[in-house]
Image 1: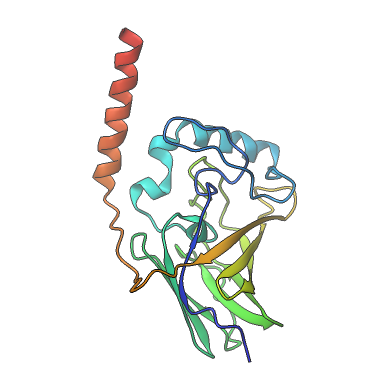
Image 2: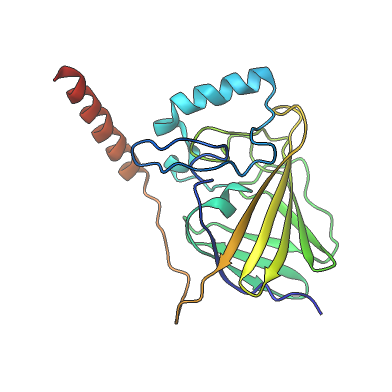
Length: 227
């Protein structure tokens, strides 16, 4: 009697680059904000930290070090992920760096006072909406490539609401009193991949490739300055 969320899904858009609205730059397409109200409600000190992150994003982004993305960032990566649904839990397997999490529906309490790359997730049904509460995330993760971030105090409530057989409305409410002045939401759409024989592949993350790319970009920029 529950919606069938099994399958391979993917988000499309530029939220993985920047959750907020942003203009196009080299290698980054322009994008509209997925944040309700447009901007993230940072506390003043946290906003300064976010701006510092942005300036250092080519080397400081944890994803460039091949760390696990965390939640909700893993849902916004432009790579497919697979949902396997059972009566007692959901498994979510992502192409990026073997990222994986289990959402338990059995009513067991979440693990608190720990820090995990993908947090600890517990779910429940509200009508046709799967509601997922995630806590115990590490405090050194980012939310996107632009340096938006959170602390270890973050709590994420995701809502997966089927729009039809091939679209899911994805909403995440983010709360972190150490970083934000109030809870805030993001909203986007997950699309079901319908290609024949579609399957989940692997995206191996290799840190030295990112470092090599950054050095090449820096070298190109220095060359431009000397011309």
